[in-house]
Image (cartoon, rainbow, N blue to C red; front, side, top):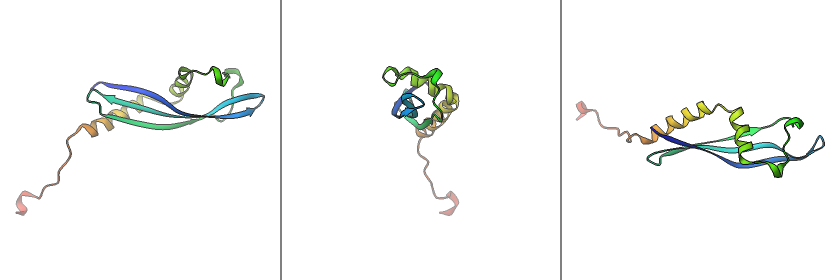
Length: 107
């Protein structure tokens, strides 16, 4: 089963001023979504928090790119586990519905 995975940044929250730095990203809300060839999809929504500002890796807010945020997420979350979770949920959605039937000897 081929699954296409996408990472969507939904929201960024910042500390406006902290330790002499401005607009420090302190929270990222994201969706990690997988869609198979039959257009069946499943998404995980998660929040990543940064407890401390790292002035050595600081990027001005207006200079941040989606790739910067993607890299932060991928460095802190187990993408393999997220992929397996999404694959399992897509498989569940792909199966035919279970139907409860009366026991054959109960007629």
